Amino acid sequence: MKKVTINSVATYAGVSKKTVSRVLNNEPNVSPATREKVLKVFKELDYTPNPIARGLARNRSFIIGCLYDNPSKSYITRVQSGALEACHKFGYNLLIHPCELRGEALIENIEQLLQTSRLDGLVLTPPFSDSKELVAFLKKKGLPYARVASAIEEDDSISVRSNDEQGALELTEHLIKLGHKEIAFIKGHPDHSATELRFSGYKKALANHGIAFEPRLVAEGNFSYHSGADSAKTILDLNPRPTAVFASNDYMAAAVLKLATQRQLKVPEALSIAGFDNAPIARHIWPGLTTIAQPVEEMTRLAVEHLILSITESPDMVFQTVLEAKLICRESTAPLEK
Image (cartoon, rainbow, N blue to C red; front, side):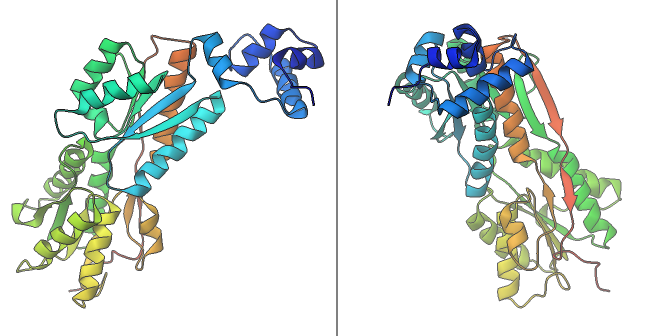
């Protein structure tokens, strides 16, 4: 069977080769009707573009890299889902690259990545999105990048995040309205800006309601289930014990729930527990976790879409937005029994 080429697509569709190329690369200056006609021919002829030839012709690899270092597997799965949606929309491929932020080898690791994988751009997830050293390196290299969930304030970049501080404030106020005043808090990974933003929201809610902040009620976690288990032991060993626990993510909250159950503490009657992120585990365990829904997929999708647009159409593109984090109430929290 004769191989279908861009020339045969152009002939079959009755348009120029340049028009087919513009549709293939999702470029402007093509009418909606013409674009739809060419896409229909792609499907009818089962045309598959040669990515290598396409890249050489455009001096691009059509590959976006994504850096991650997050102990929550569900988080990177959600990041990948949002990034893939954007990449598929523009005909790009996605390269997921695990990396460690700590240590002196970070820049060396990224340098090696760029030498072995020809990337058109890089999307940075926490904690890389908060690394000023890495951002400065990418600027020096001239490699386009976008940041997800970063607290770095820049006027010349692409950045998408959710309102972590406001979300944490609303969740803490929810617990306060249920009658809780002794509310413990488990912090997240120290390298993530979300950690301090969520902690700040917690403290602001206490202050807004005239409740004194107690350092004894704060435990250090790192967003992993195991750190949540260690923090849970510290908190549940307190005397007097708090009546509610707010963990900075759902996996740490799930660890608190497990230990409370093992100690025969009824949730939520004896202890209310809440998390953050609305990860799948929040819906799958019992009682279901009250949490804050962070739009991870949407954040990543928007970041990657604008990154690709900056590569293909507008090198000086600036896009910065904050998405809303929403409170989701489930069975793990209840009014304080008096």
